[in-house]
Length: 246
Image 1: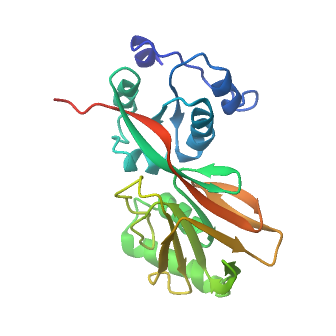
Image 2: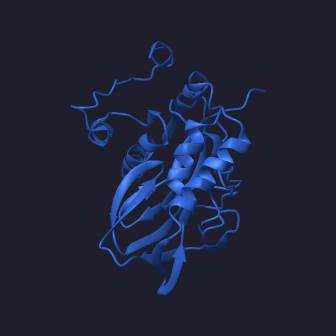
């Protein structure tokens, strides 16, 4: 907070019980708005920034900070990210939507979200042990989730929709080389989570026999109403980044 004040940035420490971050962002008298937090904290403020035609600043201050990584920020240096407010370099990027809900990274269904959480919990353990734990999850739940992708029935353990193309691995989401390609990345896997069926698209529909489905949206648990209508909004978000040192 002191470093933000030194840069002329007004801050508000959120009260988890009393504050609505999006309402605060909508009411802020500012020419740029941002949030210090992990991936799950970013989308509501980015939504407000788009609606107010303002640039958005990400301050990496969470556990994984995948979005901060993919826009080129040093995830271990939140103070340096504050420089985006004063020494501005703007980059336009795409955002994804599932229905009316905005996501910056991805939406996952099935076992993938569970694997990501397990991988983070055990990230300091040996990779071989992590692989055994993850495969054990699949072995305990051999039946997949029943889905229809654009009307085509599929039986999958994992369904994943990314905002632009990801490099996929069993235990981690690789970096996105582009955030302005204007395409969703659909990936499906069965019992063997090392084999992915992938395609890029601008829009898709995922349906299930149930009226609701458990999901993870930007790493946060969510209950989504089906059918899930996915779309992408090219270059919708103005992101401010600190200029690289000369």
